[in-house]
Image 1: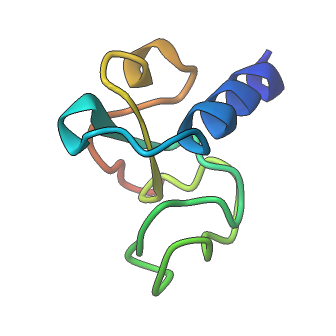
Image 2 (image 1 turned 180 degrees about the horizontal axis):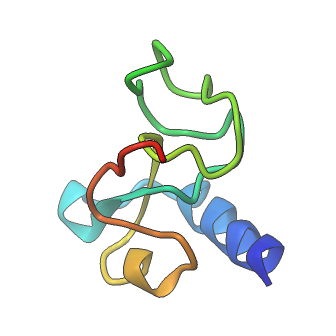
Length: 79
């Protein structure tokens, strides 16, 4: 199930660029190397080291993040 959700996230975030107001940052769901921006431990997009890194995000359509297993609108602390 998690793999299917990740596939959905990756497909949606790879689609045509939408207005920034139509997207939200979704933390904890990015696959390794597929994050959209820098994190506390990586310097730029595409550099997260592990799947579901808690401070790495991908941009998803508004309302989708909290429906995804492990998705959070705020960066999560390690632990």
